[in-house]
Image 1 (tube, rainbow, N blue to C red):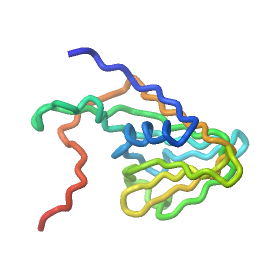
Image 2: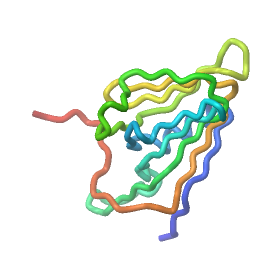
Image 3: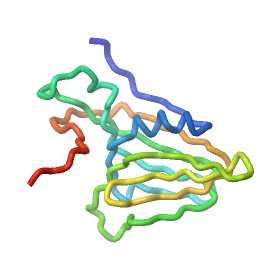
Image 4: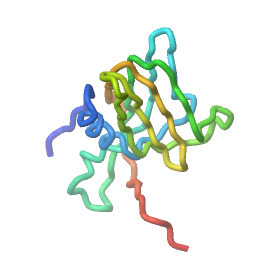
Length: 152
């Protein structure tokens, strides 16, 4: 089996962001890892990303991996949150999707990050400029994220 390499992805349009969104699905983070630098107009999130690209074709019993990743969004004018708070430092947020809704006047718009449990971040941007970078820090996990309803 070939050795995997960390992902390095850039999004400059909505289709590019769809690829990043798929790569980040089920990544987990805590509120302390959400950072908005207003002067630099940059919003970053440190995430523990499930490596979906590595799990394809693996048996359920085979170990999967997570990797530490950084999502950076540049040109951020404002950030709005719903259902996300720093008051509970142990709360874990699971990222479901990242989408871009353009303004009537290009190239600006809103990047929306949806989290499980109705958490949401809406970032108004002057243009879509998103980067996702994996680190070299990865570890094995026995748990594959699942979106099935739990049975009672």
